[in-house]
Length: 366
Figure 1: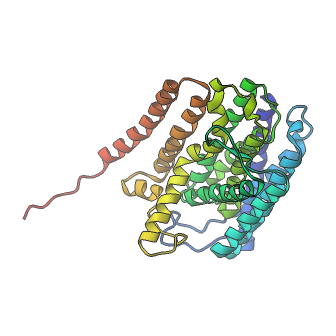
Figure 2 (figure 1 turned 90 degrees about the vertical axis):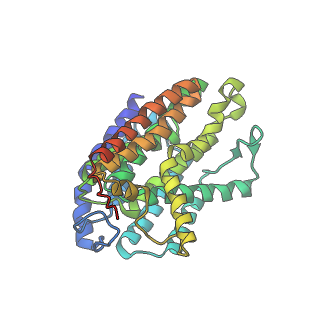
Figure 3 (figure 1 turned 45 degrees about the vertical axis):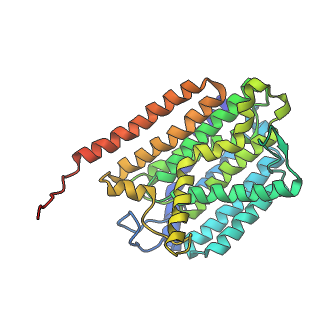
């Protein structure tokens, strides 16, 4: 555990130090856009935060590769995740600068999924009627779809300063706890790509957040959102590949079913926002990829919440799903429910306080 904590600290420190350098580079390179009606910031802010994250990730890998435990996490899968992450970061970097069309980005995301497949990162089974081993071609298709879904979920939630950064940090923390405790409880190898990648993701987010929290000095852009989404998806997939489901007893069967389900539960808020946005736009006769100002964070802002309070409320919502899900895998369900109620109540208190302080609207009687 100490080596993973050291990995988090190294990734956080490097990201924090590299971000101002990349910010200056982004401004000189024109990696920013003019302010739009749906934007929440009032001044031109550079993108390319994902470039700083990728650079910090690369340097972190070079450093922790020499640690006794974490160094054993590096292998074919970790190499594939790094190469796919590098590709998707470059794609996002170009999009941040030149605004690529949706088809190009989807094709690039699918290609990044293909890079993972070439390095053995693939969904092998699904929890259907026990454990269903998938044919290779079906597993490959599902892997690409899964990767693209998580990437776009992170991208959709990136609408407020620090929002996607904080939510991904929460999701990665929950997933790290799950993968590490699962290894301890079931006697798996604690040195694995899932724990390594999620530890690095936590560090990158913590190091980037001081620059990205409201008022943001730099945005992560698609280079960051797509990179983080790919890393989360790849971590989930590699965990399923490391689990010998037959070795898990019936009393721990919940743990076997969660690796692929966990990203959908701990990322419930981004995924919900993604689904609602697609349904909303299709019903209005618009492209599902068209931008609007009706995301969850916009609705909270319209209630009168400040930028920072809205962000914190969504952090609490993400944590309400993330950590109780992990607890439910290893502890009685009632403990998970208590934690969920405690965290969820915090967000409700904040919303109620905002509504209480909001000015009363005058009602005229005719």
